[in-house]
Image (cartoon, rainbow, N blue to C red; front, side, top):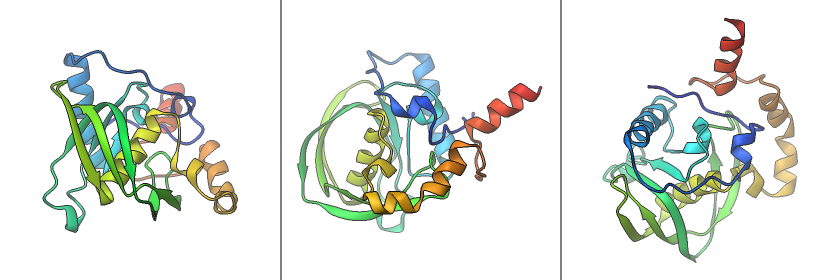
Length: 187
């Protein structure tokens, strides 16, 4: 099922998500729906708060990027970054902030402890695009958007676009939570 994406100014995106204590059929379905919604958007990462669930769960698939075609889709539950290495700046965007991009400085490599879709614990090193996407999605779990990490001057330059998103004056090629709320209230 395609889930609508919550957008900038939605309260669920501003709170720290709660850890999962295990996997059950509802979480398995949510994972499937999150992948389907991410691919439909199209995106390369999606965190549970973006679809209205304040839990520490995210999905990533960067294989649509030619240089990362061999990467496998990944489910990350209760992530904890153990170590940061290096730094680089790159332009980022977000399904929850449609039409807005900006440069963000992040560590270029991380060591991550997390649980997979079977709730088995792993520790792994990630670098490059995978490290960036994981950090971006973990930010969602912590109530932070990429725009919160932008240089203040750059952030001011996109304020009109952010105001339009907050007021619901934005269109996307994927369902937005505001659209579904508006449709429900009109029914």
